[in-house]
Each structure stands twice: as C-alpha cells, then as structure tokens.
Image 1 (cartoon, one colour):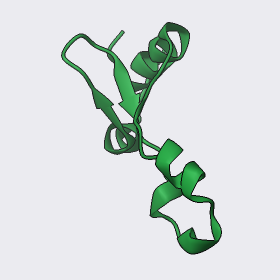
Image 2 (cartoon, rainbow, N blue to C red; image 1 turned 180 degrees about the horizontal axis):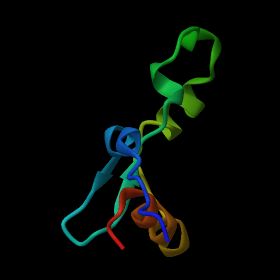
Image 3 (spheres, rainbow, N blue to C red; image 1 turned 180 degrees about the vertical axis):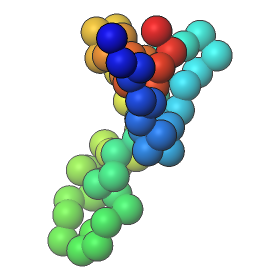
Length: 66
C-alpha cells in the first residue's frame, strides 16, 4: 500500500479548532463584482462554517491526520 500524500493546499483554506473541528470561510465575499451581489448574501457569507463530522473525517484523511 503506497503512502498517501497530504494535501498542503487544504491547510491554507481551512482552520482547525482546538477540539479538532474544521472551519472554513466562504470565498464568495472576496471576489470581484461585490456591489452586484445582494447585501444579505454578503452578510451571510461573512460567517465561518463548521463542517460536519463526515466531511471532517474525509478532510482529516486528506491531511494525513488519520
């Protein structure tokens, strides 16, 4: 069985909390043409998202954290 390479780019896109939860933020607010987007959508995408346990498990596997 070959070793699994870790996905280093994933570390730049996420934060890992002290309890091991994975937090992502939307890329939506940092793009261009923001004035055409609704203010409600911009506010909604400011909040970070905590990923579910099933996605956290697969992300940990990609990071090599078992």
